[in-house]
Length: 313
Image (cartoon, rainbow, N blue to C red; front, side):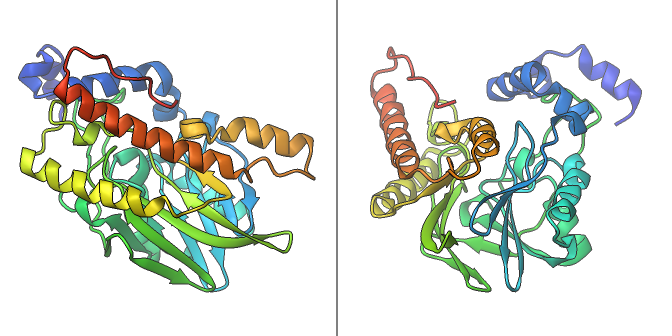
């Protein structure tokens, strides 16, 4: 886009530019909280560290990227913004691993702050990119006027693997079992795998972002019949996940759903003998909160005068 085109668009209203109220809300949120990440992302960099077992943290203070190390290679779980790829590379090297050993890049959902660097790992190292099956054709690419940087671009990425409920990805001795959990986006997925900490088997839940607004007939741009199909997929998955236990819970952002990564990291540094990330109650509370928010959304459709409950930030 030329400078003249940008200047012209600046004087148009959101409606004239085709910017939805949801995109405007996201822009305001980014401009207030995440502007540094768009212009000076290194200022939000966190030294990578091991969470538990073969699970590591590679993200920054605002957006999560996780790494699962196996005997046969690495699994990148979410990949951050496209322009933060060098920071992810730096983190992998700092942990003593090699970027070329990344075999899979698994996306919790198809928003550009989570899949941005996936094309880079796919193109450079041949890593297989994995999305939830319902995300195909629905990836969220930023448009002019919807994020703080008007010159920002994000390369589209073609998935190698589309994930359905019950599917598994195995690398080395690590097996991740998946559930389709539409809500925050149409193709959101949740994964579970076992690892070992201090000689004890523990189970890890890899969650994405919170909420069910992506299935709201008031807010979503999807056809009503598609939303009904996605709701059924979500309801079936959450019924199955009632049987899932998790000792460690992760999410798409450090403070989301009680993940509280920043605080737990400080506790870990202060007392290395106790791992604050091992807490089965966090997943149980997050699961119940997600169910509660979903039911609240359905209730508000029947009773529009009701206000939404607080998001779990």
